[in-house]
Length: 156
Image (tube, rainbow, N blue to C red; front, side):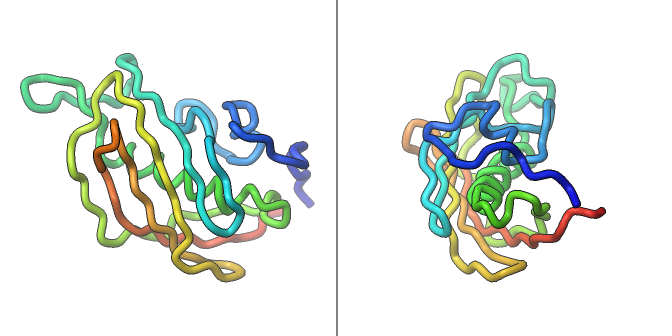
C-alpha cells in the first residue's frame, strides 16, 4: 500500500510545498504557484504566475511569447485535481484527466500575467466527475470549459 502524504489539514493559502504534498506533479510539470480558496466538493481557486523564462512559450502574434493553450488547459486540470485530491479519502489515489468539452480560449496569456484558475464541481461520483473550469487574467476570461476526470487506486 502506498504511503499517504504527510499533510493532514490544509491551511490556505497553500504554497508550493503544500501543493506538492497533494498533487503528484513536479517541476517542470507542476504549474500551480498557490491555492487561494478551497471548498471541499465545491470549488478551488488557484494562481499561476506566468514568467518570461518558462520553457514552453511559443511565439505569438508579432513574436510576443504566448502560453500554449495546452499548458493553460493543464494548469486548469491541476486546479481541479487539487479540489479532488485534497480530500483526505482521495489523497492516496491518482486522478486521470479523461477529457475536455466546450473549451474556449478567449485571449492569449503572456509573460507577466497572473492567471486565476477556478474549478467548480458540476458532477461528482465515487470514481468519476466533471468540473467546470474558468481562467482569468485581470478579470478577463482567457479559458473556459468542462473537464472529466477519473479516480483510481495507486498501483501496489
